[in-house]
Image (tube, rainbow, N blue to C red):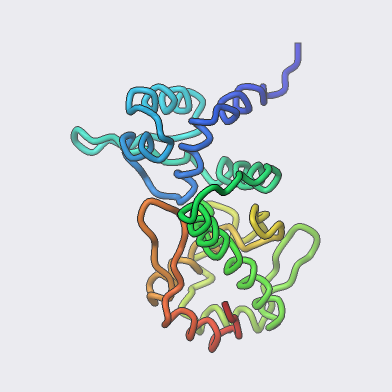
Length: 228
């Protein structure tokens, strides 16, 4: 009998279309009530509750209770990373309406990947930081240069505090739509939070797509020569 973890348990959970739809919604890194997840997955609330209970059993999602309300989120970044990788390997769905075309384009342009920035903007951000000499890739790692240390501090990011977080400081994450890497880890998280703070980007309702504001397009171009 094998002593290795049983990957089939997680694989069978994710293989269900309704559970996969729920997890895709939760990839925005936020907590959602079961009713919203049921609506997004186009299933009945009772069915969503059944699927969420199954995923709770194996710690794929976590539950937070506030009074009578119950909110669900993806348990941790490792699960989100695995899901993003699966999305990158999965065939693209057929687009049958203008609404689907618009939603698909928005997701490909910019979106959250758990708690960091993904999509074309996420990849362009990583490319710009490399081109400016602020970071460089070494094998599977991302390293920050001395110029990068100065840049992030001047941009209002305290790297000493980011390094103290109980998680990976910075690493690459495969982008499912661009088929290239974007920045993840604690640094990826504080970057997207800084963009939100500056109102360069803003969340869109009922999707993990991110809207780039006019101020954001101007700021990103001035800061890192990013045009998008």
